[in-house]
Length: 381
Image (tube, rainbow, N blue to C red; front, side):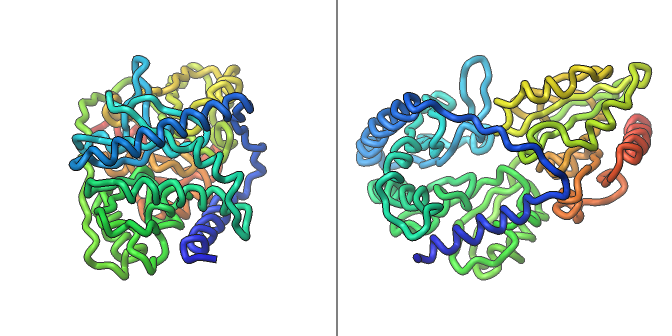
């Protein structure tokens, strides 16, 4: 077994252990594609792959960006990059790594889809472990791409999935600067918690100084020459609003609203003036109907927040964030919003953030008390 295969298996196991919770979660709902769709995606990806190879041989100052639908947002029928888009990169070449869905364009740039080709190759590659078939297929595909790439910067949003590992360990890695852009919380998250023997990326764009310190002391402790850059904070224009305003940030593993928060919602009355905004995890947007069915008998006002960026679109100064363990908790802390963590895994992950306005509640009664207290504080300032 090669080093990249061992490293990938280790990370997959660490993530599986991390995501275990004390709750009995319902079975995950997976969106399955029809055989016809898969065949279409394979053919479409093969054509895109050939077009990409041609593009790469004729473009000398381009920037290569690996992405997926979950890292993008939809607005007015157009797809926009919600992770790397703020870096104002020019001459972008987007590669969609998803094996399930295709993208046509992002911010007016054509997208080259490779997931269908990876799925096709995985049927034929031989590997000692079945779980490594996708990794092997990504390695074959990305080595062909990176061999022909004539630019000098490659951007990753996730280094620890099969696509990311195939790029990090590529035989052509020394041809370019590899850059990872933070898309979720890194502190105390397994892929970033342990020192790597290989330089994962030459540079990281992250959300705060605490994350830089964490990476220096954990993932990158063997590589002091790694560069770090801070992502710009969004501009905000907010005012205090009457009543209680809660933004619930969903966590993928719960397949709906967390049981503790559901208990809290069921106990509310219209007189309490609680307004709830539900923001779905990017990979849960196809599950919206599950959330709608859960809240159909709730008496409070509930609205789905489908904005591109909740920090930029929010106008409510006294907004309180509620989540099991979404990285929105860290975003809230960085931007001055109070929050309440409602799951033991979230407590362990974000314990370093706990203070007077970033709290933990382990019951619906305690959650209600903390919300009332936080709302009193935020409306006074």
